[in-house]
Length: 212
Image (cartoon, rainbow, N blue to C red; front, side):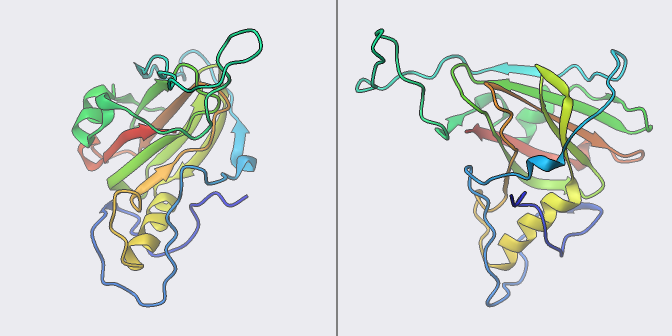
């Protein structure tokens, strides 16, 4: 499937996402929450206790069932609709997410931090990463705390390329600047961010205003 992060035209340095000159006849590549990710990019990594990054944990609690929600034969509620968006107040802004992230030195001499979001009752969770500024040399990893060695990895450069396509097509909305992580298959998803040596945490300005 299309991972939604291919293309060209983004800077490899810490790159503010700003409105660029509109290019005519450029198709918008806005990535919907339902976009299919390239699961083939998920790979196993050796993970020791020393390598594990302790994430900041955000628990959203159960999603309130609508009054007309269908019930199963045993009286329990039917599974919630996949793709229902939920706001995340704690990481709604870049400043809010920075307050959550607990940066520590990485094995390569840079910085690494992670955030885990658990949406009780979700059947496959995706995080919507709203990008204002992202170093192209950053590495983003997505995994579940239930299987932290199975990692989907993408570079900041690839995410910037997707967003740059949208901006060149004249779309500067929050949706156009949002990268949706792949589905982790459960109610919890962890986003790990690694910055290379010499890149300060202040170079990162991203938020997670919603999950789906």
